[in-house]
Amino acid sequence: MPFDAIDERFMRLALELARRGEGLGEVPMGAVVVSGGEIVGSGFNSPIASHDPTAHAEILALREAAARLANYRLEQATLYATLEPCAMCAGALVNARVRRLVFGARDLRFGGVRSKFRLADSDLLNHRVEIVEGVLAAECTMLLKDFFERKR
Image 1: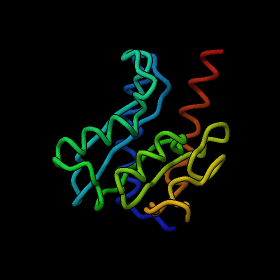
Image 2 (image 1 turned 180 degrees about the vertical axis):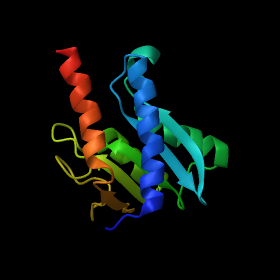
Image 3 (image 1 turned 60 degrees about the horizontal axis):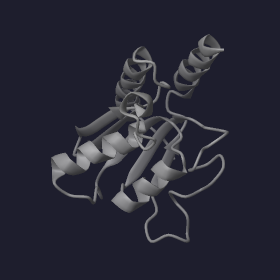
Image 4 (image 1 turned 60 degrees about the vertical axis):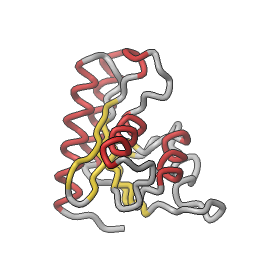
C-alpha cells in the first residue's frame, strides 16, 4: 500500500514519542492514533516504568483513543507505529477494528503483522486491518539500532 506526506507527518510524531520513551530508559517505540485527521491517542513504550508487560506504545495509544472517543471500536482510525506491532498489539488492532496500520520498521524477532505472523489482516479473523509498512523505515530502524548498541 502506498503512503503519503500525511503518513510521514504522523510517523514523525510517533518517532518523537519513541525518543521521549528512550529518554526515560524504555525501548524507543512510539505510536499515534489518528481519526478524522486529528490525533486522538498516543503513547510510547513504558513497561519498565509502569511495571506492566502490556504497556506497549500501541496499547497505550489505543486505550487513550478509545477513552477520548468513548468507543472501544476505532473503525475510522489509523494507528502509526515506529515498529511493526507484536502479536499482542496486532490482536488489539483487530479487536479495536482499527481501519489502517502504518508502521516504520519490521520487527524480525517478534513482528505480529508481517515478520513472524500475519494477524492484523488474516482471513481467519472477522476484521482485517489495511497495512502500510516502511514509512520512515530507515529512521525507525536506526533509532532502535542505536539504542541497543548503547545498551550493549
